[in-house]
Image 1 (spheres, helix red, strand yellow):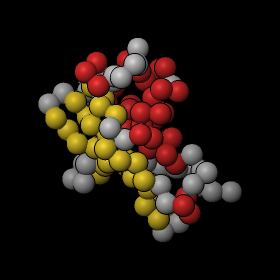
Image 2 (cartoon, one colour):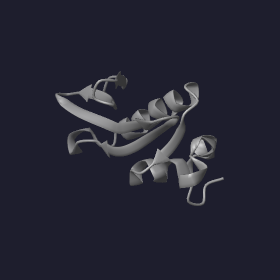
Image 3 (spheres, one colour):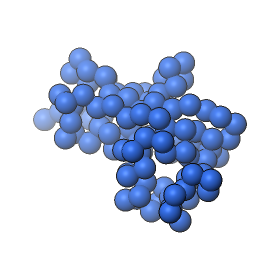
Image 4 (cartoon, helix red, strand yellow):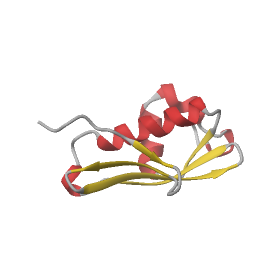
Length: 101
């Protein structure tokens, strides 16, 4: 059984990350004013199926909410996740919502 997933916020690299079993999974972003723009989610094949992508997104979206940031989901994985999770749809920038709430 794998250990619990610990997500770290690497502010200098502008990403949320998980180091596990010698591999790095990441959720990359850029900041622009009051927006956080999620640009890429990467989970190595060796870490797939462990819920790491979801853990990264939950942490990133919680960070956005706690800091009053609008989310711009450029990454298709982030967009799909938010589409399936109504509790996060209010975070999406209205200018980029593309059909969200």
